[in-house]
Structures are given as C-alpha cells and as structure tokens.
Image 1 (spheres, rainbow, N blue to C red):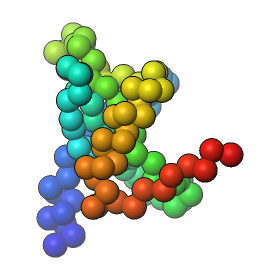
Image 2: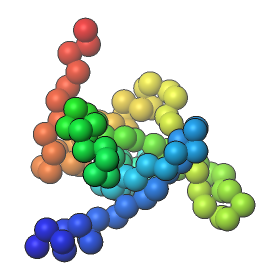
Image 3: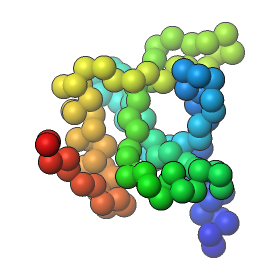
Length: 108
C-alpha cells in the first residue's frame, strides 16, 4: 500500500536561484481574487534524510504567475505581500487541517 500512496502523489520539481532542483508534493491548489495558488510540501531524497528530520515540515505556498517560460510552463512566485500571504495561508490551513497538524508561530 505504501508504494501505491507514493505513486498517487502529485510531484513538481522547481529550480532555486542557484539552479538546484527541489521536489515538492502538491497538496492543494486554489484560486482567490483571480490568482491561483499552490500549497507544496518539500520532498527529500535519501541524502537529505537528516535535513528532513531537522526540518519543521513547513508548508510552502506560492502564487502561479501569469507569465510563461519559453517551454510554455508557468512560473511559481513567492508571495511578497504579507497580507495576501496570510489570507491564502489561512485558506489552505482550513482546507488541509483534517490531514495535517499546523502549529501557529508564537511571534517571538
């Protein structure tokens, strides 16, 4: 059954600023005010197992850009506006709370 669960995951590969590839599981997607957003969970290879253990398992939320690259693929952008990010994060947390335990930051 574990193999079937792995095969059902919707996985996306993204390049960071240094050209390093990272894989993410797409947990959810939504549209708000005419923009599309994705909630992603980082996936780790065997060589990154210790990093995964140390990681807090944070949800990554990105906005789908209106622009496309030369291959017709859309970009995913970081949400710079804190208010926009908080609104989208709250929506994703509400939609995913049955599957994940979210911890609120204490603001220290």
